[in-house]
Amino acid sequence: MEFLKNISLKKAITYNFWLKVGSLIIAILIRAYVYEGITKGVKI
Amino acid sequence: MDLKIFSNWKAILEVLILWAAVYRIFLFLKGTKAVYLLRGIFILVVSLFVFQILGLPVLTKLLTYIFTAFIILVVVIFQPELREGLMHLGKRHVFYIEPKREEIEKTLRDIVSAGGILSRKKIGALIAITREIGLKKYIESGVVLNADLSSELLQNIFYPSAPLHDGGVIVVGTKVVAASCLFPLSDNFNFEKTLGMRHRAGVGVSENSDAIVVIVSEETGSISLAINGQLTRNLTPNDLLTILKGQLSKTR
Image 1 (cartoon, chains in turn purple, yellow):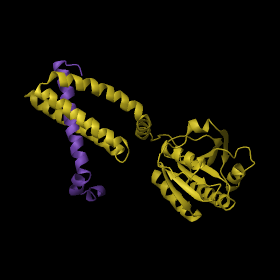
Image 2 (image 1 turned 180 degrees about the vertical axis):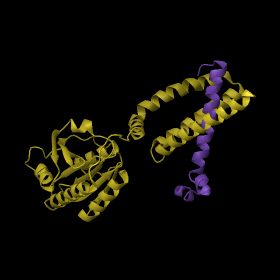
Image 3 (image 1 turned 90 degrees about the vertical axis):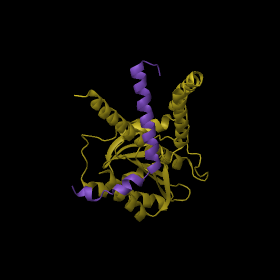
Image 4 (image 1 turned 135 degrees about the vertical axis):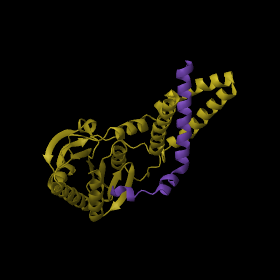
């Protein structure tokens, strides 16, 4: 478990922060859009 | 038991997996020309979602048609990047038996020795050192040798009047697998005009694989190294050996 000592939570959040935020938004949109397509039978 | 809890944790898990996948794709494309395209796609996706929420059926339908055509265009335009991405995804070999460290070091010293001698004599050379991604299609374009690598063999191959001197040599482990191989030319528009086809071919094969390519210029005798589409020029034999050792130890 040596590698745990080298993990910095602050660095994990701040590194490529906006890229992570953008990825999260897109992931939520994709999930919502595809789920809606599945449940309501809407053709994508 | 409230089944909604399960549906919530499943939704969270799906979002997390999608987040990781999207983030990795963005990381891969960061620093490439495809990043500008991603911004366009992001705007389209967000707009589509907003139009749907606002209940604007005509705009939603229009944007859906545009988005579908856009996706097909993206695949056509960014086919090299997609191919590279898939290669990176599947590049770990399971049954590859590595040569011993001492054998690899001897191979590198032989390559550097040959490079130094060819450089002094201003004899052009192009040597691709395979790492994890195989170069089978380029091997098939050349003459298969499967010979133990030595400095003398490389010098012999690239000797100007030798039958195999045109094209590139492919090294796998401690073997010269093929010579006189055709490498793809780089389509990088920023390539220096003073550099010839040999350098362009070296950079080209490094763009299409993870091979490390040693290039000796016929005009100036300078030694260059191409890795992942990046060319490092005017290396001394010592520099070359240091970089090769560093790069190949990363692969292990």
